[in-house]
Length: 344
Ligand code: BGC
Image: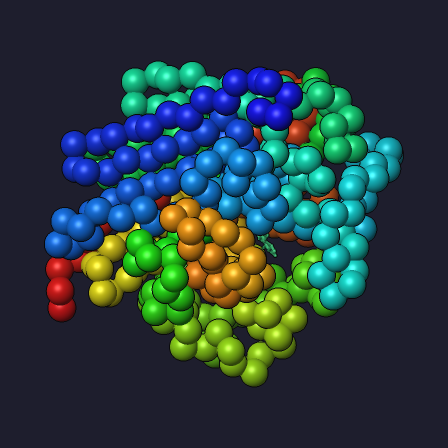
């Protein structure tokens, strides 16, 4: 690190040609390599070649985002009669809000990593008042690569004072393995009948809108590019897909979304225990990031599938609670399951 602290990275491998590399800075997923249907191995994630690159990662590539993933209106919330002001580090439509944990969120801190079997466990102690959040928060994030070709990301947190938590994993996926290609030719399916419309500041209005009959309907697999430029208010406001889909109700782990790239046959299914998934189609990528192998990341060359609680939940009583109290354990599990499909 610039201040001399050591940074470690770890590579997990399985017997099927998959590798996952993770790093203590930001608890990021540095890369995920996987064969296509012909055995051709490629890295399916956007990122950087060196720590210097990751230190300048302002687009949350591969990151563990916290304490609160996505946006909080005006960067303000109240809890037990106290009002807290967080950093307003994002201004969609010229309207300031809090995004992804603030100026120095969990994506920009140094975690401590430890190897256990086929897992790496990262730990970070976030002090009371960090980025304006109350309570000392003790956070662990565990990455596991299984012999079933699954990458697990599991987050846990405990606090010593009432606070809010919504930890999110923010990898940008491109199943082609070539980040110069758009994700518009990927098929996406989302297990959701409703999405959360936003205002111009990309904060949910509180409405749960029906997806049926709109370009937000991914209840069956659809090409991302097919309707991304449709004349539809939600797409205009966000510049494409960048919304929270409310997952069909259910208990425990369930399918949130699946992504399929026909030319390579690669498929990724995302399972979660969370109530929602943010699908962000890389609309803000504009070629200015110089990523791995000297490639710059152009518009819509990565898709984030961020399982989560609803954005702005602390300010919206009709949304699931994001409050964590002493004695409780915040838990969030996501499984990325990789397969290949034969040529059809
Ligand atoms: C959000 C986008 C935001 C992006 C930043 C996503 O999770 O939904 O609105 O611009 O993160 O990289």
